[in-house]
Image (cartoon, rainbow, N blue to C red; front, top):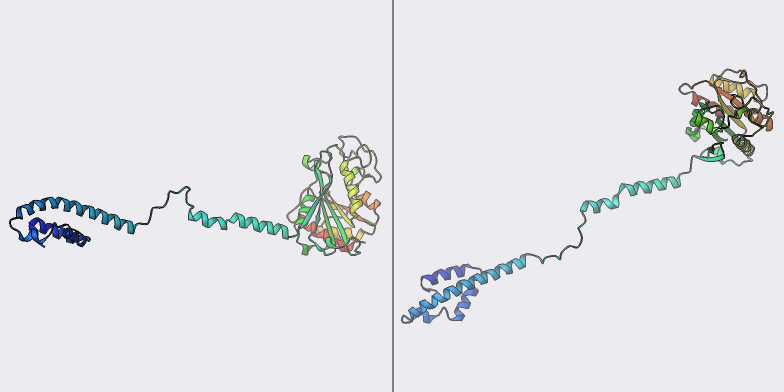
Length: 347
């Protein structure tokens, strides 16, 4: 629809716009474009003036419509703006790792294991030393013999004492081997008790005596006698069973009534022979371990722990094993096996 040179330019621009149709209709409706403009020569000059006025209005209208169209298009393509965040979003890695934390799994597994598996041993303090250290005894509760009734005639109670003289500590290695053995390595009728040291102060100080300078292996009640004075290697104490360590051991043996007790010492590397009913047992122990059968020379042997035990409980077997100054590789295990092996020879 011609509207002079300016009109043609406007028409083309307007119709090229997506909303050109709407602009054209508006122009028709406003009277700006009409037959009276196109066909009246006498009014041409006025039409040209009107066109100039319309040109400015039309350009403004096009721009306005374009802006409205752009805003409309933008509104339809872009979702509404989210409200401002009040807290930081959680990272995906944190959300994923929280329910599968290894700490929770490990804790759960550990708790389940420790509450469902039975203990392999129980440790009980039977008394305290002069300096207040506990005198502990370890009971292997994971073996069949520990489940036998006390009055079962097949039950054999075995007690092993690792240390009585604090500077003779090789017996602790034998205790460790006995603790480490699997239940299948221990005879089914054996109820096993392990006492690492009745002289924990002597072990801590690496000295023969207890903290009162008493030789505990001269302090037991059987035929106790005064031996020397404090500072002497055989000092027997002011009276029989004067020491708290001796008293604790006396009461514990009375309670437990072991069928066989092995007391470890050093450094004579021997086992004393016996003419009594436990003679065959001692000989077999010597054979299994390679210890010579011979007595320990020197010393005054009154108030000795093993002798007190044998004489007080005549049905019990108690003997001393003298280890050498040191243990060779595997020697502690050899003694552990020998202890369990000679049980079958108990009188």
